[in-house]
Amino acid sequence: MTVPALLPTPLASPVAASYARLAEAFPGLRTEEPARGERMPRGAGWVGADELAAGGPALDAFLAWDDAQVLRDHGTRARPDVVASFGLHRYAWPACLLVTVPWFLDRRVPRLPVRNVAFQRVRGRMAVRVEEFACLPGDPAAALPGARVVDGEEALRAEVRASLAEHFEAVLDGFGPRMRRGRRALWGMATDEIVEGLWYVATLLGEERRAMTELELLLPGTPKAYKPYTGGAGFRELAGTEGADGAPAATRDRASCCFFYTLRPEDTCLTCPRTCDAERIRRLTATV
Image (cartoon, rainbow, N blue to C red; front, side):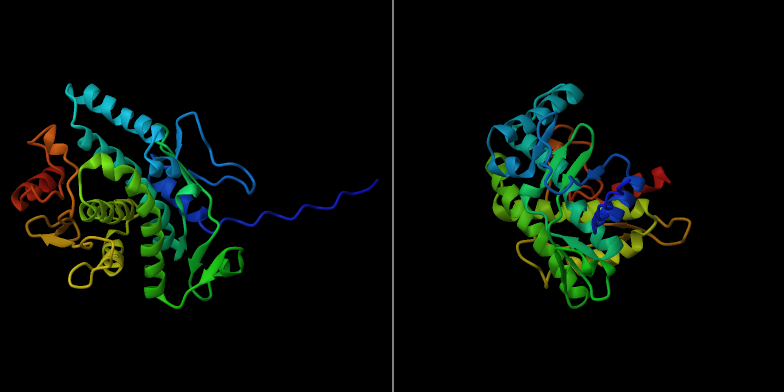
């Protein structure tokens, strides 16, 4: 009997382990990677990031979900620019994690142009195709196709900023005309999503303080700002909120506003500049 030749084992994705840990910590978001030659998912609730960037019918349908959700949950219609802001937040928050989580956990930074990302918001799914990624010297993944070895941590942080800038430069072109905001304000929103997404996930992983340190280095803000990003991580401590470890709770002031106050003025975000420190302390101590 002729024994068939064994097929070569497919090379592991350089970011698969990171995405698996993200799903374990935050089951509301799961990431899949289509096989080589397989098309990115479309239909059945999926939308490509390139479709959102085009700003046409696919973006209209995407924002119709936010419009209906606001009406259902709050009994009123939001302004079109507010709906667009909600839609951008709900895409950008998970999209940023596709880059920041592999960097934070495994020091690997995928390049994700919009053609290589798709989103299924109802099921909390992202699909990505990683064709190129950066890593540090000595990383075993350096031997994988598409790897680019960079010299040191600051060079790798530059790759994070560049990867996210490439992706959101296109996405903001699609959302921007719907949001009635200048380019600086749009990049402020992207900056906030980068910081607050990883901050939240790292807290679930038990690594909040390390994430804060890493994010301060990634986006140090004034006077060392990195364009096109607006501001920086900007963490600070809230006295009077000491936890079990004796350390005060951390907070920051967002560079942008989600406009949720236009629906419920009394219910601002915890990091919104409209929320005073006394109110932040009240909410945090009440939660504890």
